[in-house]
Image (cartoon, rainbow, N blue to C red):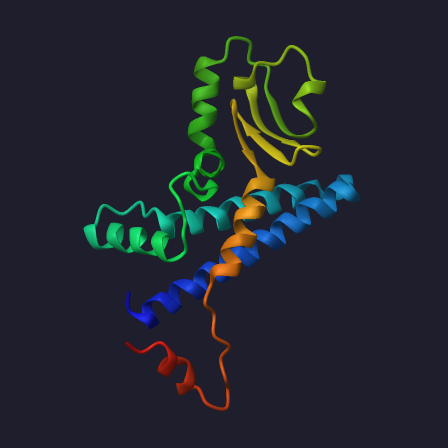
Length: 188
């Protein structure tokens, strides 16, 4: 892969890792010091985390049908040693949040009891009588797991993957006194 081209992906991956880790830190801060005024910020941080990790996923597993994009994704997975079983490869929860309107349609047409359980921060073990399919958005603070209609995402596993990815990035600091240095390093 062209080194400048790879550098551009390095910087984007670094940015998405930082955004995801900032969002995760905000989630943890809320859990340590909850406040009714900050509940919207909690879910804002969840959305940011899902968006950033999904952007990483799309770099490594492009949704594009173009063969050159698919080849680039495969090559980048090799460069960064990203395996197919990587937690980045699962965009299920992000898709639930992104397509909430469609999930609500599904829930309304298929729920037996219409007992909705949405936007909660608690263990699902503490609730009785709710079908998992009636759980739209729930966050388990002890496990750091996000749930949506029976699917779940372990934020601990993604945090480990983010930290590991950051270690493999090949970011070269930009020297403002010699801007050509950066591009010289990445020339073929």
